[in-house]
Length: 151
Image (cartoon, rainbow, N blue to C red; front, side, top):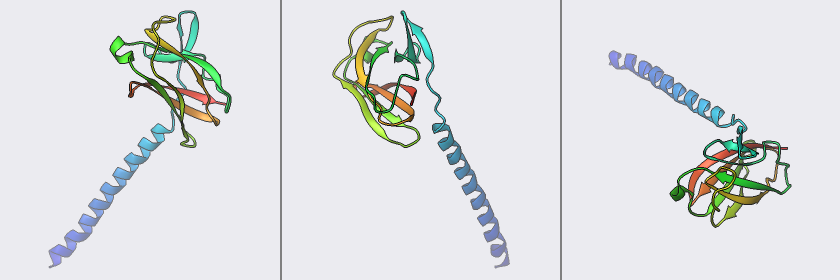
């Protein structure tokens, strides 16, 4: 009976230690997600774009967004014809408030433009200030993301 009483506290200490390590790891993941950096700009044709060079982007820079104001943005895509076929949708997610909006939807992409394999004009408006992640979907599949700062 005495040996059993010695094992119980030891098991309690081991289980508590494992629990703390799991929680610490979860906290680190949450911190990484909230620290999104504004996307880089890159040249394409005679324009400067914001996004991921060789993948997707739109003409402009991170400071072109003003909360509640609609503006025109020309999206550009690089990739195989098969992955650029289908409807296009942009879902915006505010990193500070968790607000989510459908920023733009169209039924298809147009052909090559400004050095990209496909493009589409859009009119987008983001409703509030903060860091916004714009998730771009082609034919229901996530194609890439662009992060902007809305003033």
